[in-house]
Image (cartoon, rainbow, N blue to C red):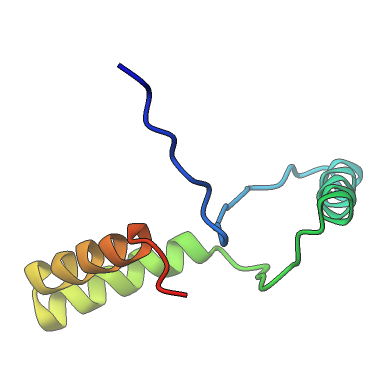
Amino acid sequence: MAEKKVSTPKVTTQVYQLPDDQAQRERFLEGIRELAAQTGAQWLAGSAHNEMEYVEALEKELGDELGDLVVEDFRLSFERKARAPSEA
């Protein structure tokens, strides 16, 4: 049976916790910039804040206000739409 090829999304979100060492942080970020330049990838957005902590707090607050099932339904719907083929 042939393995199903999964297409790479056009936009991805990855979160890294950078090392405490300033030189190592700069080395990592410079490597990302170089790779983006080599591949033609474009930087779209960024943050120096803990976005995952924010999302978790938002999820809890919405769950408290709207109910956990509403929040989970929204998440599942969002993920289904993200996996659906583009209608472009």
